[in-house]
Image (spheres, helix red, strand yellow):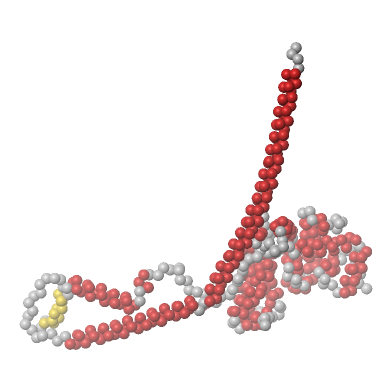
Length: 195
Length: 251
């Protein structure tokens, strides 16, 4: 039977490092993905994810279970991302190669996917990443938490320390900017009057 | 009754993500059935959402792990071992005794005792004639030497025993690490898979390059035929001109 987060947290607080490592294994990829999408750099996202777990481990005795463990981790990771953006004093960059390396791409190729489809998918991904880069940090974070981590409006509001209505406004504004960006890249099917 | 208007973007977003109560959902549905602009906006934003799914972070290996300081392996390659630290203690002691004995024999130390007490001479010079005196009783000295040798032997045996025990424990620790072995095998397997994928991709690239090259060659050959036709045409025209000129009567 798989232990719940709460059980693993209890074991970790009691000094079982292996219990905490199971939590790390469970959450390292979502936390890395969150950091990558918010700050846009692979190496820095790894650092942020690693630091998130270190801080969580050190602060574990103070974690009283007032929030979900995942929400607590997300909060630590988002604070670190915010520190990173503030420290670097720059908008997030999205690492995208100039050309498309077929060898790199082939490793991601699905069983029934042609190279042309793969290139097209990567091009779309690049355009979406560019659009995300255009958004202010709050809107980008709200969209990342909603779209990729499935958090509720209330959970996002708690993490961003803002009212529920602000979260909805951020999401609407962010999606609208992305829509305009996709249209400007020739994806007219998102245009209101395009079809 | 809940009413929805075009500028109610908060409820529009809530509707888009399915986080609305049934009454609001019904109100939005009713509005969308009448308002083309809002219906198009909902469709467009839904499309943006589906495209967002294409943006995935790199598939990297993370393998974060919390390790206690005491569990960290001691660094074994940071400091080169001194050569004598690899020699067991008993062998070092034996070597020291050998060196001292060799030194004594080279120096030709001679110890003698007489009425004046013990005297010691070194070097290869002739020894003075011994004075007539009472014979030296060396029994006590022999006993001391025997005791010292016995204690040295015990010490050497203890060191040999401890060295063997250390070696045995090191061997068992190495054998009891199958997890490391599995990890190494896994890494080798992953590396092989990566190589296979890279090879397959190179093959695809090579095939594509071949096709491009073949097409380019065919175009070049086609162009060559066109040029050849042009040249042939020009030569025919020239020939016709020559025939025409030669057929024209000279004035």
